[in-house]
Image (tube, rainbow, N blue to C red; front, top):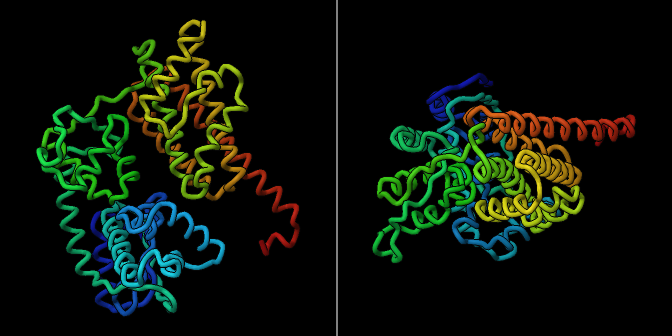
Length: 412
């Protein structure tokens, strides 16, 4: 049996119900934008699922819950790649987790993937009957009907949460009503974790990524913190023709900082500590003016610290405001280009596609929501050109390598 098509709203729950009732054995593949999920069925029961989102990975969940450390995870990921074994097997072999803990968290991972999947608003699906080879895999036994009921409850609750959290790009700040003692506020550990990430700079999307919690959990906590009066939505710093001086510089820096923060978060998993040092090494190849302005900049610094240090460097340059702004934008363009080229040279184009897509999303948000201005048009056009050039250069290198291999390129 083969099924395929588009879905919207709650239609996915009907597909899961059908596969459950018909006791199917096979794989359901679902995509929505850049997200992909695969769900494996055996006689109508969900036995495994994989997701493309970082938050869905087993190691990420184990680290988030404090079962393993970041160092242990990185070590085991490296061994898993080298030995071509599953991360779970390496973790058990190293004694970092027991088999019972692995099974428990494997089930938890599958549940989180599926709850997230059932919140997708639209996309494409394809189901195929296939014979599953489950030998050596840690499988789970999940009843789709139970998942559907929980997902439906979450969807209903999200409609309430979205009255406050209208976009994943919203930024919240602390109101100043937070007391010093935890027992006076009566927040639980999860609420304190999310509160610690709210700094007036991180978007909702960034908080979800850095917290390690799923989107639904973060939305609930932010909704509660807002209801308590502990946080409030921050008025966004925008590019606009009316902005001048520090305000204008801050808006420009914020856009590029968002871009470069998204880049480093996408490569930390692959490059480890090398990711951080790479951003400093690249500066050495910048023109002197750009190097001076960005001397103390790093995407892992607090956003306010980056803004303050860059504005101090700009004001130290004896130039008219328009010329200083030109140096700032040119400097960030040159820096962003070199960073992306260096990463593409290390990782290749496949991982770069996700990085560039994230950058495109940020620029898309600026284009859609920021006030029309000369700076907005300039930055949107410049960054779009950078993305296009990186893609073209890398595609050209891939074609050249492939052409040089002749007939043997078919076996690469």
